[in-house]
Image (cartoon, rainbow, N blue to C red; front, side):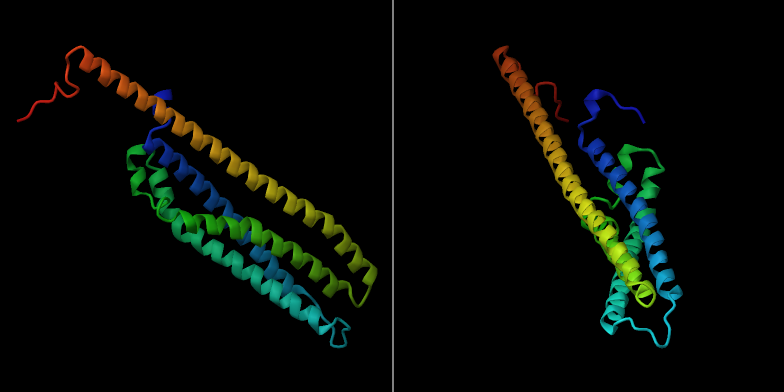
Length: 215
């Protein structure tokens, strides 16, 4: 859809932009959660442990807890996405800004953000921990050096991941702040123009609502 520059800051268009953003977040969340939870389930099912394994029981408990949390977090994000996304898609496919109020994306904003955070931030962190623990469980009986190598490689990856997440969210918050400030300034300019028009009308002896007819 194409819009003129004057209509880009109307409440309906801003709500439409939020609708499209919520739709994109839910789609990304559902795909990521389905993929990673499937990998976690396969890893837990396919891992082979010997009866006389030397893997410490604490490590097995950590593996079970991490896998369960990973699947539970992604399933929660997937459930939220599956429940909300059809209602948003229905409004988006109509391609009409006038119907944006029929979408629940404003009322369910916090649920959408929760699904996004669980799928991207918390879910990916748990997945990295899952890989580290799985390497120990898998290679402990054969080569501890291989397990240590995998853990050492994952440490800088985890640091980079956390640093990028912090930088991304700070940049996103700064961008939202700038957009909000810009919108407030435009509203102030619009209010000043309206006040100036009313003042000029009074100076010319014209009432602001002289064209209104009462029936």
